[in-house]
Amino acid sequence: MTPNVRPSARCRALVLEVSRYLDGDLTPARRRAVARHMSACTCCATMAACLRMTMAACRAEGSRQPPRAVMSRAAKRVRVLMAREKKRAVRP
Image (cartoon, rainbow, N blue to C red; front, side, top):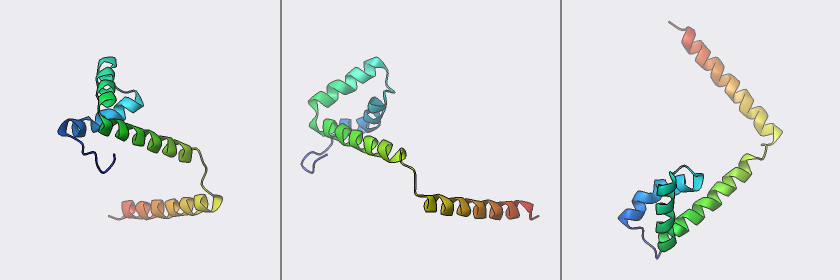
């Protein structure tokens, strides 16, 4: 959304539906209604475009593996936390 475009109450109500629209999780009739609204509403069309870019960036990052050192530190930290929880469970 641009600073000059303020979402209406209707647009604010559609925020979740825009996300579901992009995920393909709406019924065909609701999908058409949201598409119609976005074709006439600059605010929602801009929001959908920004959300599409965010989703693409997240997907791209999700396919990359973290460096080995990061994975090693994370695994060590998980083991420490699990050991701590195990000690708590054993205490009366």
